[in-house]
Length: 79
Image (cartoon, rainbow, N blue to C red):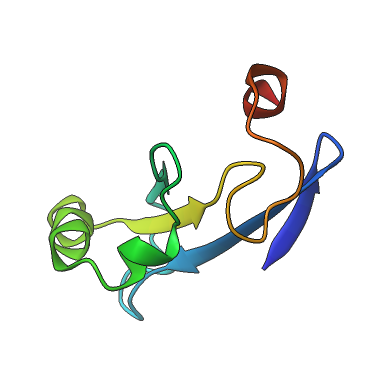
């Protein structure tokens, strides 16, 4: 999914299991410098953390990373 935040298109997705998607527990995560959120989709350690927290996740790419628009600068990160 893509959403517009502060004039930037942000590439994001949700992760969850059928038994947790309705529990209203969410973890928000993004990668570090130049890392793509898509890495977490197959990351077993990240999935274990979510399971331990009984949480779903919203994962996203910062501006300028992957399909997110703009450039990765302080003002874009704050928005």
